[in-house]
Image (cartoon, rainbow, N blue to C red):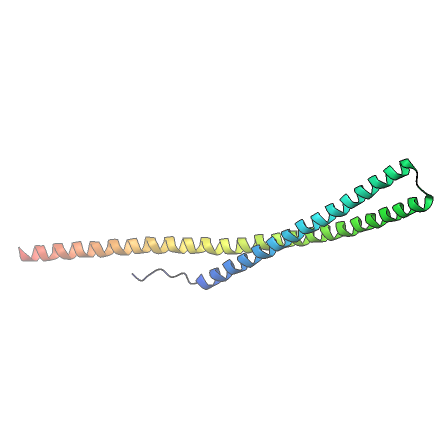
Length: 150
């Protein structure tokens, strides 16, 4: 019997390549999320530090101009935190989209792999039956020759 050949092997290879690409895209999107989380954390840390410094100096006594300068700096940092948080949410949405695309690519590949396994199993069963028929024919042919020689 001829060697097993899965007719959709090239499609399966393509699906594997697509999955690899989707996994890479998802990994890059997750990396972007982590980088953006770090930016948000840094902005929050700067805000806390400036706020701490402002409270310390205010307790010691500062001018109204200095207080207004601190408050303006705090407002700027609040806007920066809000902006970076919005970017973080956008990165998270993108990462989720990439994750869904990766899941779909994995499903597509898995369907073809299961089909390939089923076809291979069918092929193996048919090969075994063919081999059994061949052995039966040999046995029958051998009995026929032995019967004629007597």
